[in-house]
Length: 276
Ligand code: DGL
Image (cartoon, rainbow, N blue to C red; front, side, top):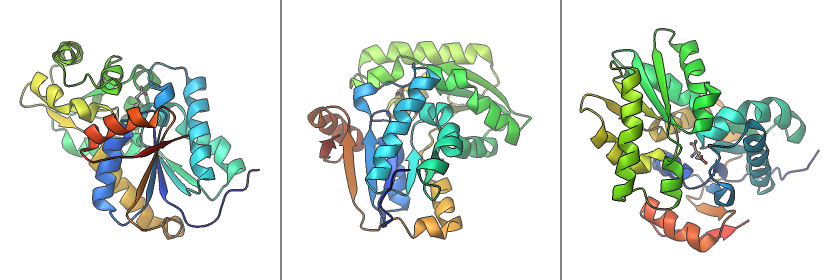
């Protein structure tokens, strides 16, 4: 069993790339005093088209890395990792790595919130191939709200567009329209569309423009944040192990220069990342 530091430490936020920055940005608005470590596995992104085995292996490596940096609590700010790796990590790996550390995902908080937003009880999900194939959203939503119908649409080109900083280009419009049309063709009663990938808020404006005005777009950041704040209230023993200083340290598995320029653009603030 590895021995990780028992000293209080920042909260770990993990994503396959830049997408988790959209979640981190919302979390920091509600928890400005806490410290965070962000880890983007940009060298191996996208995860969305990879098998269960590979997403699990990559995610576990990154979680262990965050544990070895001291984190007691790690948020998988990635739907693909939450869908394909979270349960195994929680049930199989945590008991042997360190039963007192915690890893949380972002699908459940989103599923809980969507039931309060939809009026028609018909919702759409945009996600990676992996998240859609895993059926995690229809399963979680079905357990909580059996009256809701979920139609899913995989959008395999969204993450590469964003990771390559092409999401604001004209070329992106074509794929936004294509995926939205494919989703709406499956169900014309949809009134709420979940952005079920943490990268997609960077395309939110284009997605909203492509949708009829009565359809609401639901980004996850606020709901994940509310769930985290609630979690820390309910678990004072974990909360006590999270340091307060209002800092964020950024780490990427790719070149830090590339990460710095894209991440600074996405977040609208200067970022200096380190390579791991
Ligand atoms: N941001 C991730 C998600 O929420 C995954 C993107 C990817 O690596 O494919 O699903």
